[in-house]
Amino acid sequence: MLYDLVIIGAGLAGFSSALVAVERGKKTVILARGLGNLYSSSGYIDLLGYYPATERKPLLSLLEGLNRLIDEKPAHPYSLVGTDMIKDAFSSFLSISEVMGLPYGGSTYKNVIMPTAVGSLVPTTLFPKTAERDVFEAEKIVVAGIRELIDFFPAYTAGNLEIALERKIDFYWVNIGINVHRELNSYDIALALEEKEIRDRLLKQLKPISKGSLLLIPAVLGVKRWKEVISHMEEELECKVLEIPTFPPSVMGYRLAETLLNYLKSKGVEIITGYSVDYFKGDKDVEEVAITMSNGRLKKFKGKSYILATGGILGEGLQVYPQEIKETIFSLPVISPEPPSREDFFNLEGQPFSSTGVFVNNSLQPLDRTGKVIFNNLFVSGATLGGYDPFLEKSGNGVALSTGYKAALMALKG
Image (cartoon, rainbow, N blue to C red; front, side, top):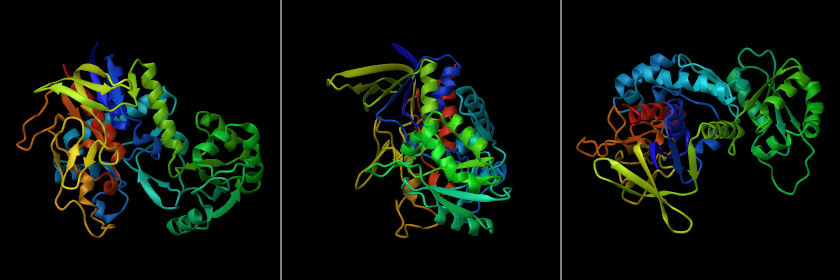
C-alpha cells in the first residue's frame, strides 16, 4: 500500500501533522515505538512563555515577543514556520478541539497566567476551556488537597500563591475514603471520582468551605467523564473549579493525548505503536521504512512523503553517546552547541544541549553540514529540531504544534 504520508512519532508534532492530513483526505499512517510525552504533559500548549528567556518575566504580548524572536534567531523553528503559519496552526487546533469534544481556549495574541502544583504562576497560550478561570479576579481562592493523592501538598501550594498574588489563600485537606495498600496517583484518583458515590464524599467535605470561591484542586476530576464530573462539582459547590496540572501521570495531558488519538483513528489514520522504525531505504528520496515485528520479520511502509517527529533527547529521537548525539532512524546530522553543558546546572541561560537537534531549511527538510537537502520527501518537526530551548523559552508544545502543521503542508504540497 502506498500512503500519502508516513509519520514517525506519536507526540503532539506527529498528531498535528496527521490532523492536517486527515482534513485533506490523505491516506496516513503513524508509526511509533511508544506514545509520546503528551501523556505526561500539563495539557496546556505554550507558544512562547519567556522572551528574552533569561529575564524570566512572563511574556504577555505574544506577537511582540514572537516577532522579536524571529528577527533575532533566524534558525529558530518559529523563524522557519513564520508568524502567519503559527497563527494558522493554533487557530486550526482551536477549531478542531471543538469538533473533537475537548474544546480549548486562548489565542496567539496574549498569554494567560496559570497556577502550578507548587503554587508558582506560569504563562501559557492554549488551555482546556474548563481551565478558563482567572486567579487575579477571584474574590476568594481555596486550595484543596486529597490525602490519598501523592505529590500534591495544599499548604505548600497555597503558601507560594500567597506570595505570588499578595493575598490570603485558604487551604484544606479532604479525603475520598479509598483504602488501598499502595500510593495513588492522579490517574487513579481521576478514575475513582467518576463514581458518584466517591465524588459525593468529596463534595460533602468541600461544601462548607468552597461556596462563592475559586476552588483550586489537582487535575483529578475524571479521565473520560470529566465534563460530567466538573459540572457536577461546580453545580453542587456553587463555585468555580480550576484543575491544576499535576506531576506525571498528568490527567490533563492524558485527556488531550487520548482525544487526539481517538479522533485521528475515527478519521481513518492507521496508528501502529510498540515497534521502532529501524530500517529505511532511499537516496535522494526516502522510498520506504520498516518496523521489526515480534516474529522478527520486517513490515514495510511506502509513502509519497515522510515526517520525522520522534522527539529530542527525552523522547529518544536523539540518542546521546559519550562523544556525540545521533538522530536514531535516518542518521541525520545533529548540530550540538559546544560545550554541550554548563557546570552551573541552574544557569539562567539554560543548558546548551537543550537546543541540540537536526537543522533544516525553511521547508523543514533536513540539511547536511554543507546546507544541502538530504532527502527531498522527508520533513522534520517537533523536538527533533535544533535551534531552540523548549524548557527555557516554555515553547515545547507550541513548536510541536506549529512545525507539525507546516511539515504536513510541505509534505502534501502539490
